[in-house]
Length: 576
Image 1 (cartoon, rainbow, N blue to C red):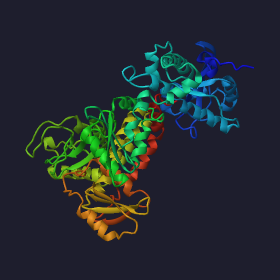
Image 2 (image 1 turned 180 degrees about the horizontal axis):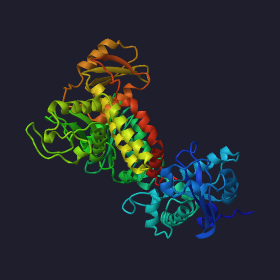
Image 3 (image 1 turned 60 degrees about the horizontal axis):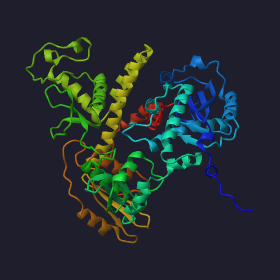
Image 4 (image 1 turned 45 degrees about the horizontal axis):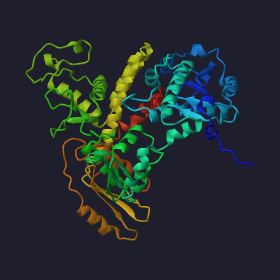
């Protein structure tokens, strides 16, 4: 019997024949291990035709957090009479049987479905999955859509259903987004389900064409720089294995749209070999801060930080400044924005009644007091009601809170939050929570950085892979030298030689003067990693016993649910 050539359709399942179930979940939080489903919405479609819908509220078995209710509109009263997930799950699994699942940020929704199946004795669904976030990043440019959020894509494709953080409505909007994306994918010759799934992960023609750029890059730790034909640096990165890392940019594993765009422009890759991984990390930060490559998002502007300064005046005040001076003033920072610095200032002023006016004030200044006097928030030194000696006690309390003991600020702001909560003024209480967090987080960070930036020289070593030792010389929080001591070598002459040839670093003004905060934090992470041994410490390396670090865990605990929400929002959609 003669062989018969197969048709094109036999190469895969045509998209017009695929039954999709586009679904969406609302939940009480971001972790399937800790949170529960509150609503399921799904739409079954094939060839553009809606075949059916599935929608139900779900009783999560516990209270819905207030900020989730604000986000989704689903309250405890709404789910009180709803079925539990064990009653809903069989019907949903039957609805999706034999279909291809589609969701916006599908990993979030499928994790919750799998967790529910595991908890109630059902095997996890083995359906193929299509993620509209990944597909959108593949077929749309940043000029068309600034991000891959569902609301953005729904507007772009003119969906009649507006996403509103309710499951069925969001699923309906995702249906229109899916159809728009499939139409776009057709221009890339994607016509079957198999082609659609592989298309998202396939390297672009530019990636395939430029694989040769990695050929001259050596193995080992270092920094790499992608450049265009004019020599402009487009992107800077670091790796413990330069060749493997650079080669990964030309494979299907690299799916970031901006990086794929960068690959299309790049014409060469330069590299700098480093002695250790820490040196590579530090050099990367310094090079990014200097070159400011347009495709790097992080660390491009280390100079754009601000500080909260307790001024050196007869009656000091808190001022937001951009420069550290050797003037004996107390500084708190660095802050990434004026807003966060102002939040920390307001938290500190809740505990210490410093003057909040911005006019200069001398011992002879006399003017009418502001409303803060009537509120008991200021002693009115401007009217002469408070002497310089009395005011100095408040200034010293502020200095101690910034540098040594954050407890008074924590106590004052916490007391105000409790009062506001008792009055059911929750939004105002959350504002105070954010202010307190800005103060505690920054104070803890600065005290941690200052502990090492005070040390003229610190030498430490960690085991290398080949049996030798990675050795680093750190001066005032700046990496001054890095080297690898071979296995079996005598440590004393090697360390002395490395220190003798290390960069000279001079003491300077402020808590962080010799390097950026990011560089010093890189060094601290390495010093705190397993296996690192201190060889020499010139001075004391210690944190204040009542410092802000002891309160940071309490602050972070209050932000744990919000962190999950923001993480999923960055992936292309808000928390369900």
